[in-house]
Image 1 (cartoon, rainbow, N blue to C red):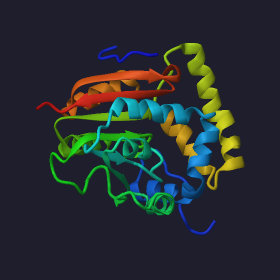
Image 2 (spheres, rainbow, N blue to C red):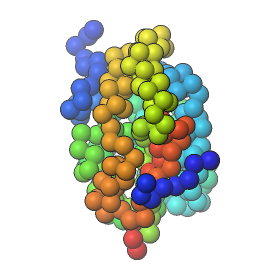
Image 3 (cartoon, rainbow, N blue to C red):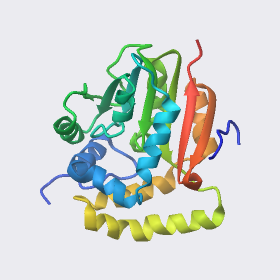
Length: 243
């Protein structure tokens, strides 16, 4: 297992552009909501299930703790926290995703919210987590600061995001998969395959592991570290809010 590293058409928008206008991103996710979980499972070759387990392990939610799950979508990512006895709040700004989530898991307190302007008081949550959502936020530095604000002193953040494979030959192969294989697979299983062209482009443009770690530090987080999964295809980033 990898170690934590501290320094090392009907008028609707079908896809977002890399300037990530919020209304375009929200509309894009509204379009893919119904088949979102299935599509992710297929495109990741089932790896998304393993990644969710690693996120749950890193968050380490405990009974009665409050956990904010940002970009929770249909709340598939929220369920492992709820099973620990923690109070988990799934939050997303795609109303389409929230509606699908409520159909499946109506007992959870779904909340509509923008990651850059969270509708929560200061020092509310023991842990804040976001999986595959930070990359879609137009001003993700503002989102990192907002996560810090709503986390209680001593609390933690865990970010799971696509990243940059560390082994050059694998990185080349992965990039080929993103740009060549992913779009036709998405056309076969997704209700909005154009959204997955954006997915591939946004992954390529995303900061690498050390660069994102530095952005966390600038937002106020301490003890920042990361751990690569699947050779760096996905990376878990972790930070703490000092007491």
